[in-house]
Image (cartoon, rainbow, N blue to C red; front, side, top):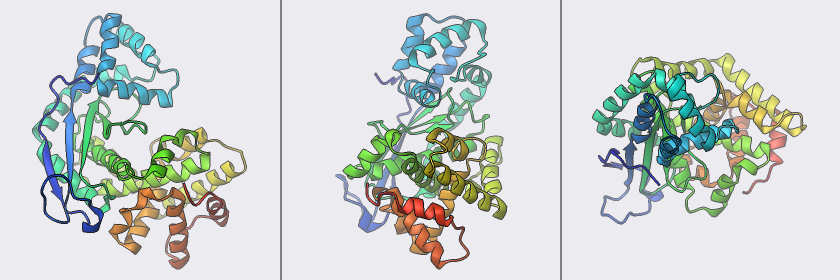
Length: 372
């Protein structure tokens, strides 16, 4: 059951100039060469969580009812990806325990963080609601130059509180939706917008493969794919989202927006760029030799303060878009991720100014299947 109490109903259809050949005509009348992105915001998960943690007691039924909310259920599910002991059942028990003691000594739902920042979350909900239309326009303007072919799309945005992720898209979600945590944002609305822009690009990636069965099957089975395949795919997906949502272009100087911006500035120095590519080479070697696994790979490159493989993928994508033009992005996600790497290998052969992956990395990746 999807919770619909007081969701934002203000929907603005944003006509955006996508590439004429890339757009199939929607049912409604529109000018040639345009497509529609519709962003719909739902704040109820964040609102219900901050109301719940403020309570002095919750019955088991009341705590379990929180999971009927679409955003809360997704937050719990995503937490379980990183922390297998974090289940819907443990969430119910943790909620009941927390509201009585107001302490959360263990667990990954971050209930103490939600409670501590509940005033900031309330302020963000109010501020985001008041500025929805302008925020929609800015986000679409930023992702537009790198938009894959989608046709008209409606993306549901759920603002949540709790869990381990700042923002996420569920791989197996039948709804085109994303989730952004407000308790992590330090009350900084501009930082939320920056995070939201990155996640909206992930939703566009997902929408672009809707009519490509091979790509859909690959994404649906990503958790069971060989680690090397997961590495090249995740580097592509996160790298292109990092490019489209370049935090150096974000507005505002609040603490959360500044955190995202500083991450880019650290990772895009010449020294760190070389270091990130070397780390990628070492991880590929470890996977190829059976000395490491996916969990270690993910922690090394996609988690933590720097998440260096986001920037390896970003640099590769930026170079290819610069060389081939922005239409390169149109079909990028309906092609196997290994093709993205093959394209970069060819480009770096021709342009000595680009960062290069090692010959061994190239050998390993070119040995992966060139098809889905």
